[in-house]
Image 1 (cartoon, rainbow, N blue to C red):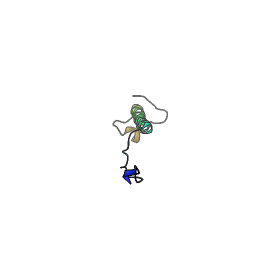
Image 2: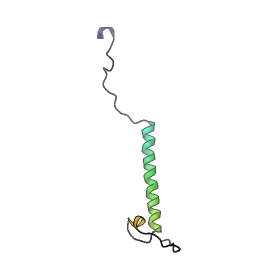
Image 3: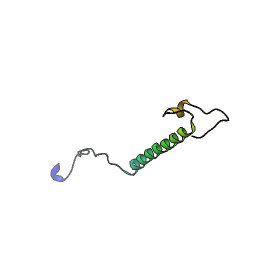
Length: 69
């Protein structure tokens, strides 16, 4: 068969995965979402009365007494 230039279907090896526009945009979106979460967390740290990284999740402002650090 190879003498006539014919090949069996699927005879080539599998194609390697390559990065295309969509995977690049997905990576950019994940980076932007991570940056946005960081900014929101930093602003939450400024508003909460407690100290430490878990303060935005555990401490709450008292009603009517909101103060910025």
